[in-house]
Image (tube, rainbow, N blue to C red):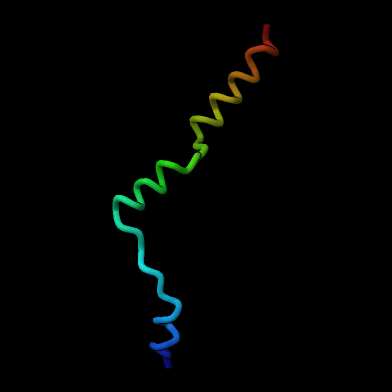
Length: 48
């Protein structure tokens, strides 16, 4: 059976939309495009 009092102690409210947006945009995330750009930049000097 679920102990609601214990579950409430663990509860952390989610960020508001503005706060979440700020946290996401301030995080430096590398995506596949960034990785491909770095790979191409590394490969070009080797070809010349």
